[in-house]
Structures are given as C-alpha cells and as structure tokens.
Image 1 (cartoon, rainbow, N blue to C red):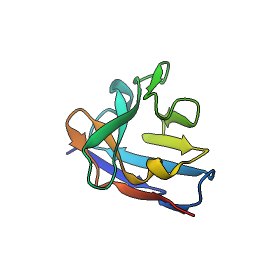
Image 2: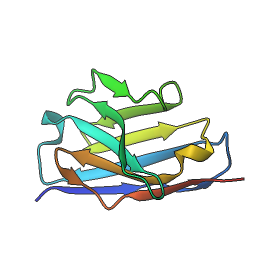
Image 3: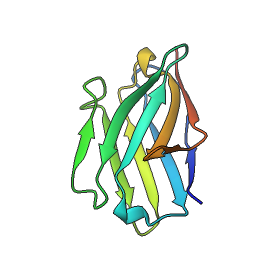
Length: 112
C-alpha cells in the first residue's frame, strides 16, 4: 500500500534552514504529482507546494515562495522540501501527500 514517511523536522531559529525528506513506497512514484502540506498549531491544513511527476513544474503557496524549494529524486522515490529564511509562522507539522494519502508528518518549530 501507499506509504509516505517524512523526516528532517526540528527546532530552528528564525532565519534558519531545514530540509525535509519524504520516503515513498507502494506506488509508481514518478507517475504522481506530490504535494507538501502543513498544519500550524490550532489551524487547518495549508497547501505549501506541489511538484509534477517529472519534476518539471513546481508551484508554491504565496507564503513560502522564494524561501522554500521542492524537488524530487524519482530514482530514489524521494520528495524533498528545502526551507530557508524560516519564520515563526512556518511552525507546524509538515506532511507529504499523494492524492488523499498523507504521511505521519514531521514537526518543524521555528523559535528564538
């Protein structure tokens, strides 16, 4: 079955950087658009970024454009989110998703 496992979260100061990873299995990774979504404390899910199966097109939410970069390695069936210039409001649980499937998430906390 579809499995998505996020990692790489942690505590970082404002202005810092992190790279999140999502290991996938159970489906033909290169055939699918993948998304990153996040959930801030007490709030609903927010779409962050999406990337096409071949990696040729990437879109970002206005809130992260220019600071976050999404990319994928189809050979390794891995999805990545490189986050820089992190802000307090980037705090939340980050999930990779494929269709309606989501992983367990990885916590990102931006705090001084």
